Image (cartoon, rainbow, N blue to C red; front, side, top):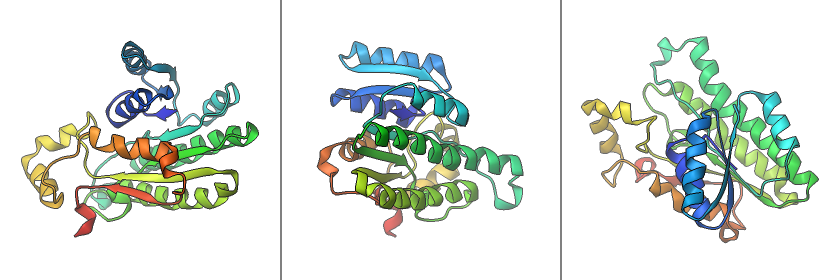
Length: 238
């Protein structure tokens, strides 16, 4: 199951997992986008379904998981950002970012795990974090707060679930060029500041994350839990 699968990282993750042989369920609020994504995966020979679901609607989330067998892998990817100086952040901004990036991620994982436990399924929770869950950044107070919290949440999940052979890890990318981030890079000053921090000298592409996602989904990472794969081009090494 991949949340936020309509475009960008989520859609690429679903395609990569399907290519590796997984039966993938694409989740997003945008029904047309995920339906097109699932169609493309099936056309390429994969197995995919799309389910329109707003992961911030916790009652709907509970009903979704109650109505189907357990998943083996969750890619907890749905998220948003409202970059502003901390003195300009409103309560509405706070709720929008923290509710989706953290609260929804928590309860999607919780309901997924409850079903895994009831069906006695071992598996992997993969939470899409950020390098901003390891460092700070200007105009990123809400985003950093949500992604640092996601790191702690995942570590605690790992401890709670290890006895059930359910693993929990994060992936922490640098700036990845997606429909969400592309408008920011239209500002040449901002783009130059980002490239100066990414030591490999380029923006990330969704393909740069697929190896990490497949690794954490598979038995190749069977001894990994409670940690983070930082895919940041060297940003946090400085």
